[in-house]
Amino acid sequence: MVLDLLVVNVLHGLIAVLWVVGIAHVAAPLSPSTLARLWQVSLALPVLMLALRLLGLTPPEHLQLFRAHHLAQALRDLNPAGQTILVLLPAGSASLFVIQELWPLWRRRRGPLHAAELVDPRLDAALARLQPRLTAAGMPPSPLAVHALDTAAPVAAIQGLLAPRLVLSRGLLDRLDAEELDATVAHELAHLASGGNRTLLLVWVLRAVQATSPTALLAFRLLCEQRELACDAWATRVTGDAAALASALLKVQRQPAPDPGGRVARAREVVLQRADLAATRARVRTLLDAPIRQPAADAWVWLGTLALGGLLWTVV
Image 1 (cartoon, rainbow, N blue to C red):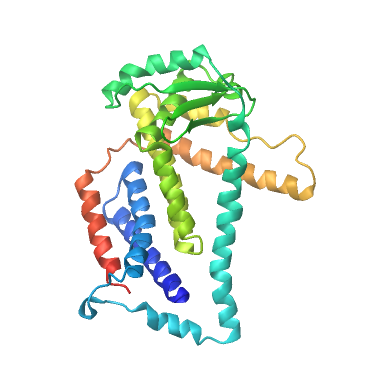
Image 2 (image 1 turned 90 degrees about the vertical axis):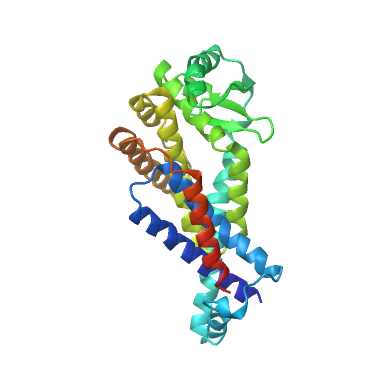
């Protein structure tokens, strides 16, 4: 039973990933916002299909395009070497989820974000400068609390679920000029406009439920990448200054720790710095070189979601 569920989940995830890649290729160019929504759908629908299967809501036999239990039985009949690989694949995916995603998130949440929160007039001034542009962009005024974190680490984030607040660290505020600060605040507000931490929590739950699926790992990584690009694009539309946000990204680029410890710790810092640098360069190139594209209409995304959901329902 467990193997059947794992096989079905991986197949659903693979179909969903290929579906998004196909749409992105056929309908290109799509905005990062649209791509983020499509990747979120590709992460959510396999979980929904599992829930329907557990509830016994499967299609009638004449509508079943593929029966995954035949594949699951073939996997059970593998020789010992094949069964070892079969065990290592989901175990490796789950390990990557814990080591590369869950553990770093836990460390960040217990790190600079727990510094004392202070009032800083620079943040209030930035929000006041942005407010007319935010209103014009369709984001109504809200009693959003803004605080400076008393830490030298470069931090910018939306905190809280029911009463979200914007926090920027003193270390970050001291590095940015007024235009860069406005662009950074606009980027964080873009996360709030796209659902904030409630949407992010849902995404993490969907990822955790599919921790053993390599296709969920791919969809999650691409979703996170497109979410950041979508917020960059939204901030650029609000401020009209892509160069300011690009400059801010480069200023807060990760620096290696002064004394990370042993050889393994130093190697880890170098790898993380290079990965962050590559991601930052890609975002900067997109900001400066790619045209800003409007998101697709909701109706098209919902239509595609229903089509994919119907297809996945027939894979049992």
